[in-house]
Image (cartoon, rainbow, N blue to C red; front, side, top):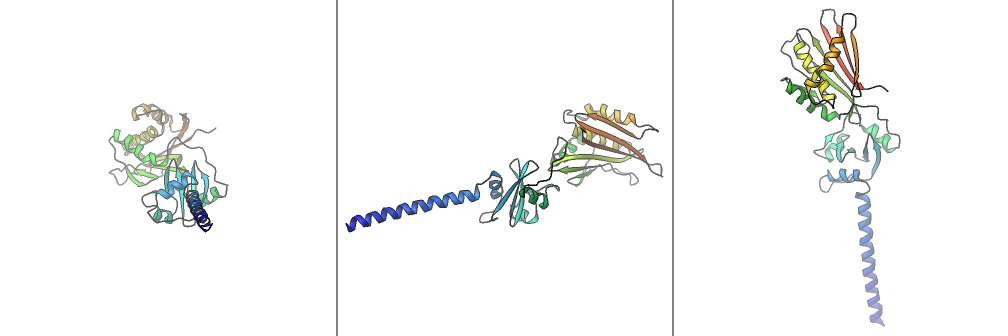
Length: 260
C-alpha cells in the first residue's frame, strides 16, 4: 500500500509540473503574441529588454503600440519610433512622421483616433527618391533640407532657389507645394515644377509626358490672370504668380487631392 501511494503521488507531482509548464508557456505566449504589431515591436528590442504592458489602437492605417516607457507605430509590418524612449529601445528604426505623435497614439488607444483626411497617392518617405529620379532626368541637383523639404540650388545669390515641401498625415502626403522665382532663374524653376508634377501624377512615368499639363498651367497665366487651376488624375493642380515691389516674379505650384 505504501508503495502504491508513493507511486501515485509521484505521478500527481509530474502532472502538476506539466500543468505549470503549459500554463507558463500560455502566459508567455499571451504576453508576446497578442497582436502582430506587438510582435513587430518586440522584434526590434535588444535581448533582455522589456517594454512592460502595452496598449494597442488603430491609427492611420496602422497600429499604435503604447507602453509605459515607449510609443511605436507599426504600419505594413514596419516599426516606427514615435518618441525618444522608443528610439533608444528600438535602435535602428526610423522615426514616425510628424502627424503620428504621442497625442495621436494615446487617442488611438483610447478609441478616438484622429481622422485620416484625403491624401495624394504617395507616401511621405517616397517623395524624396521620386523627386531625385525626376530631376535626374532634367540633369538638375536636389538638396534635401529636411525629410519634408527640398531645394534645387541655383548659382545666383539674388535668385530664390526653387523649393519643394510637403504636408502629411498618417504617412501620406496631403499637399505638395513648389515655389520659386522666375525670370532670370526660370531655367531652373520650370524643370523643378515639372519634376514635381511628374512625381505626383503616378499614371505618367516620365517628365516628358507630364509637360503638356505643366505647359497648360503656365500658358494660363496672363497679366490679368494670376491663378490657374487644372484637375487631372484625381488631383488638383494650382499655379499662382506673384510679383514683388522689386519686379521679381514668383511661382507657386500646389497639388492637393481633387475636391469632392
